[in-house]
Image (cartoon, rainbow, N blue to C red):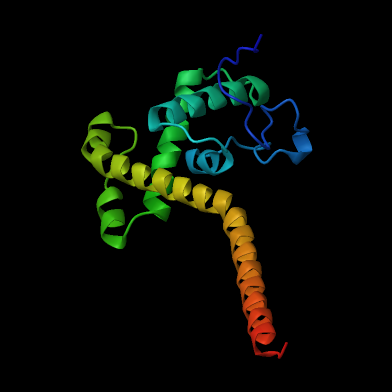
Length: 171
């Protein structure tokens, strides 16, 4: 009988993963940002599942690493605010930065105004990493196919040469 898997898998190179030693974990000082989390996750998820997985990761991290009195909800909200600021700094044009610099990240009405921009940017970032992951996954297969094709071409050329030589030789 197959084993039933519930929840999300362990995060690679994280202190939340029992198979990773704390000194080898990349998140030993701070939890992964959402972008770092996306880069670290090997599986492909729908955006809503990815968000739920990240929330679960933050909860696990909070249980493992912090002794603060802040609730999980407050920590998750703070991490998402930092994530939005990270998007503003690293993935927006100068004009977008100028507009987004006026946003108060603690004001929910300001965030409602900017949500369309952030939603579009997040989708493009996720699709970028999915494409990169797919290309990386198939790069070894493509390299092997090139080698096989090159070998077949050489073999075909050799066979043609041999057949032309045997046709020109007198019997």
